Every structure is written in structure tokens, then in C-alpha cells.
Amino acid sequence: MFPAMSAWTDWCYGSPTMLLYDHKHIIESEAGVQQGDPLGPLYFCCGIMPLVNDINELNPVYNKWYMDDGGIVADVPTLLKVWELIKTRGPALGLHLNPAKCEWSWLNPSRTDACPIRLEGVSDEGQVKLVPHAEIQMLGVPLGSDAFVGDFVGKKLLGRLQSTISKLVEFEDSQSAFYLLRVSFSIVRAVHFMRTTPLHQWRDEAVEFDRTLRKAAEDIFGFPMSDATYAQAALTPKLGGVGLRKVVEHADLAFNASWHEAKKQSQEEWKQPPGVGEYAPQKTASYAFDEQVWQFLIDHSDSRDAQRLRRVAQPHAGGFITAVPSEEDGNDTVLRPRNFRVAVAYRLGVPLLKDPIPCPMCMQTINVYGDHATCCTFSGDLIVRHNAIRNFVNRIASDAPV
Image (cartoon, rainbow, N blue to C red; front, side):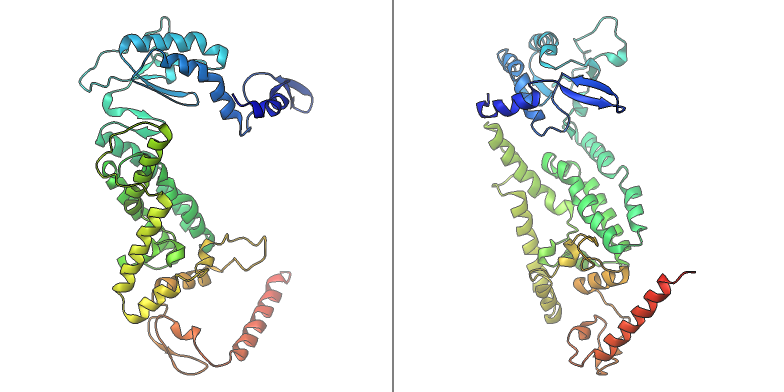
């Protein structure tokens, strides 16, 4: 199938691999693909391809596989033939049927007949499961009723989210806590459902997910966010936000992109569902949406706030948001919790002071947003020297033996 890969394949699998157990026992690995081999899934798919083609010759309505996870739609006699085909031919190809992990569903919602496949001498737990039409799912994607979809997504998306996020909020390092929240627990957790399941079936769960993330971010930042502030925070860091994107705003864009890409990949003709428009990659569509929100915020702000929104959208202005907070390459990417919170507040236009105060150097008034600190023309030599001495004394005190 891939002649150019034959030499590499022979080198990897031409002879048994020697596995050493407990530093003395040798086990010869002679079956299946190697764990961790990036080409392993491809080799497996090539191996079962003849079986998939044989199933196609039975003319089922639907026959799609993702490695060893297949979905087949046909009439009962055809499905029984498919079952026998997989059971007899599969083992020689490395595909062994596990009835307990197989499911049977009637596409007619009103039909409740038992599964026609019944194994002799096998307990009910080991039989093929009969799954109601309203509870059908494939590859972790719920395809049943709206109530089932909402419940399914809620359990997967919100199940342990609160307990996990609570631990992040308790981090002493605010910068690291928010970095983990943004790259591991925010919208990235919902992308699977965003791209596979229409939002109208799980909108309530999406709203709750966004609300939970907003509250967690507020706890990490140390201040509440108004709706306007949250709208900016939900933008990409390239446009002055902090990357706290909302699922309810981007889910339809993700599903639209996924539908078109899946249709192209399958090389089939599909009926376009309601709500799906012209194709636009998810990344492109989300950025365009963020641009519209950013411009809306500028248009509905006073001159000072509009200028702030333009400045925070300049290249590299959000570097402290996207940088990995690690000391591996130095301390430039690491901010103390207080400094990080102040930087985020300043970026989002949140007041830093309760009341205006005079600048200790030039005695001009510093407004509550802290703007004066960035434009004071007086020399800061005295303060710089004072801070250097303070840090030096603090270092000596910290390193001194108790």
C-alpha cells in the first residue's frame, strides 16, 4: 500500500522486539504494533482495511471506522452477516470482537425489540448492549435526544471542573494559575463538543461552563469583572484580551468549520443543516469575531479607554499573558502575584486605586487607573536605588540561617 515505507516497516517490525522485564526476563514482542509508534495506528488501519472493504461489499447504508471503532447501519439480515464476518475474519487481522463493548440501536425511535444478536452461555453483562435511539453516541459524541445530549455534555464538561478549578484558585502563584486555567481548563476542554455537537443542544451547559471559568479568573485576578471588562478578557491576547474565550460565542463557528471539513474529508454530499453557513476555518472565524468585539468596545468607549484598547492590542503587549511562567530561561517571564494582578487590571482597564493620590516624585495627581506611572517625566533614580537596597536587605534576611 505504501511501497516507499516498506524498508522502514521491515526494519521496525521485520523481527520480534526484545522487551526486558525486571532487568533479567526477556519477552519477545511478536504481535500488534509497537506502543508509542506514531505510525502504529496507520499500520493497524492498513491491516483491517480488507475487512472494511468486505463489509462494504454487503452494501450497508453506512460503514465508517476510526481504527477499531466502527459504525455500521444496515437492515437486520445484513448486520447479522457483518457480525459473522468480523467474528470469523477479524482475529487473523488482529481485530477481536468484544460483545460487551458492542452496541445495537434501532433507528426507528418507537422500536423496542431486543437485540437480534444473542450469545449462548454468556451472561447479560457480556452480551451486545441494546442502546435506545435517544441515547445513541459514537466516539464520545452524543447523537440522541436534546435532553440526552445536554446531560451527556454536562457530565463530561462540568463533572469535575469545579473541584479542579478550585485547586488552581488556591495557587499562591497567580500567573501560573491563570496560565494553566487558560491553556488547560478553559475553552480547550470544550472544543470536542464545539466541533461535533450543535450548540443549541447544550447551550445551558455552555453558559454554566463560561460562568465557572469567569468566576475562577476573577478569583485568580483578585477583582470582579464587569460585563464590558469580561468582554475584553474574552478576546485573544493579540487583541488586548487575556484569552478567556467564551464557549457560547465560538461554538457555532467551530461546528461550522468542522462540518465543512468533515464533508470534504469524506468526499460525500451532505445536506447542509440549519445554522451552518459558508466555510471559514475555526481559527480565522474566531479571530474575525474577536476583531468585531474589539472594535465594538472601542466605538463605545471614551477617548481614554479607546486609546487603552488600541495600545493593549499592539504586538507583544500581551507577552506576559502568553509566556510560559518558567525560570528555565531566566526570570523575565515570571511575575510575582501582586505584579501579575496589577498588570492584568491595568490591561483590562480596572481601577488600581480607590482614590486619586499625588505622585511622590512630581506631586501630580495619579488617577485611579494608574496611568501617571507610565508617563511621569521625573527621574526615578532615588526610588530605583531605594528598591535595590530594599531587595538586597531582603535577600540577606531570606538567605540567613535561622
